[in-house]
Amino acid sequence: MYLRETRRTNKDGSVVAYLQLAHNERHPVTGVSTAKVIHNFGRAEKVDRDALGRLVSSISRFLTPGGEVEAGDGAGSGVGPGDVEVLDSRRLGGAWTLDRLWERLGIGAAIRRAAAGRRLDGEAVERVIFALVAQRALEPGSKLAATRWVEQRVAITGLVGLSDDAAYRGMDFLLDALSEVASEVFAQVAHLLNLDLDIVFVDTTSTYFQLDVADDDVETAEGVLDDDEVTNPVEGARRTFGHSKDHRSDLPQVVIAMAVTRDGVPVRCWTFDGNTTDTAIIRTVKDDLGAWGLRRMIWVADRGFASAPNRSYLTRGGGHYIHAEKLRHTNAEAAAALARAGRYHQVAGNLRVKEVHVAPGGKGDGDGGVRTERFVVCHNPDQAERDAQVRANLVEHLEHLIDGSDAWTPRRRDELGGSLKGKPGLRRLLRRTPSGMLRIDRAAAKAEAHLDGKWLLRTSDLTLTPDDLAAAYKQLIEVERGWRDLKSSLGLRPVFHHRPDRIRAHVQLCWLALLLIRVVENTTADTWRNVRHELDRMHLVTLATPDGTVAQRSAVTAGQKTILSALGVAEPPRILEISPSAS
Image (cartoon, rainbow, N blue to C red; front, side):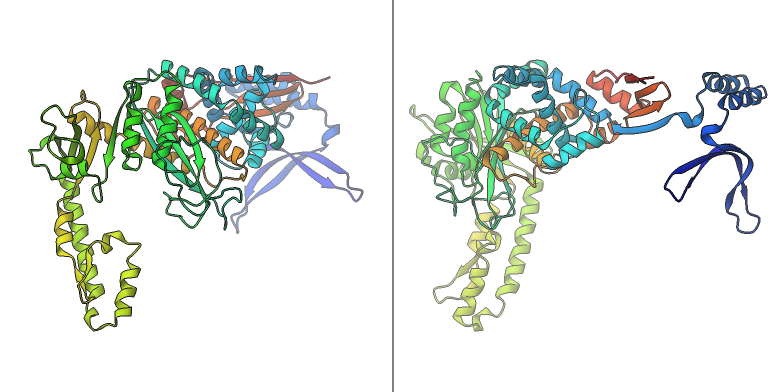
């Protein structure tokens, strides 16, 4: 049995509400539950509510003591079930947690100080930038979508609404103040998280744009710029054609670089024109981080950054490097290191290492006082087996392709060779005889077998053991994890901007979001996806009562308590806001 309200619309458009006492009965034939009216109280605005209160009090005499108190409270206050209305419900947990970390890491304070020096409203600018960063972490979308997200879907302290103009002004400010904000954030994060800054991992990626042509103001838009090994590229974001790490060389792109610690915490992010080479980028990264007083660092980078001028540049001021070398078409020193005989020693169940010293030019091992190059040859037996099987599959496939080719015309054989141009695994195993016939290159296959399961490291540091060098390089996977999170969880792409400055600002918003979620993951030992899903269950509900409105959060679950406790974040107050009615 329950009290229900029904509404009727008159011809003039007015709506009349009626109160009825009803209960549900199940139809004996159809089994459908239908409402049966027991008593009509009449029009809702004319009902004697005091009489309803007396009725509730009378009924409560037959209830349990707990039930009587509950009914008595409602009757005595004159507030019936229809007098409380839910006006709004917004997600609270995720934004609240990120906001507390935002302040603890000093990001908000750094932005407010930078804004104060530019005669801007620091509080307003900081709230806008936080909202854009939180959106990337919680519900990635365009900046226009961010305005609706803030207005309708999330509760952010100190921010009721957000216009697209305010969002773009916040992005412009962030880019203008990036150097000072990034420096302050780095110092605060390094202190609070006690980051190990002896080893810094650097890597690049690219993100493409669905365009047919590159930006018009780039003179060399149709290819990768040659590195003069002297000039340090400046940051930019012109969409040009270049070497795509997304395997979309048909589309314009920009190049993004990131430096992270061994714990995966990103300390800085850079954006460059789409045709900038890795070998040039590493010099800009080194100078920017060197300006923060990080003089004694070991730079860990992939083989794309390797060049003699870069190695010399990274060792300036006492720094060192660890980088991979190409196994094929490599330099003389690396080739000599791979060919050098020696015993491996076991590091782990699936990794063996061998240290080799080679003189410059690859001739000798540095005897007689010649400065040597230090290499570590790493070998993974499990990977070697996989490489051998892959090569066997390629040979079998290639034999099938060239079967009967001796009877083909020269043109048809040339066409097959041309079709393998974009398949280096097959192309390096195919050879042409002097008469133009197609054959499997058994010598090349034998040479490839010597490289199975191997990777080669070069370093200038003489203090790290071969075990440490191999382990440090394997931790470069932390940067790869950062790229995956940027492109998936944080929605780096698609980029809804065409101006270079806005593209750069968009990347920096993603960097700040990645910094926050990496701190959450490292502290809670859980993925951001799981943490976000649990925190998003916490809502801020706005209730309307006869005495005013109340903004109250939902109950904190056990999972939310565990997350907040691990992060050292206090639970949101149960009541966040009370607005008494004017009457």
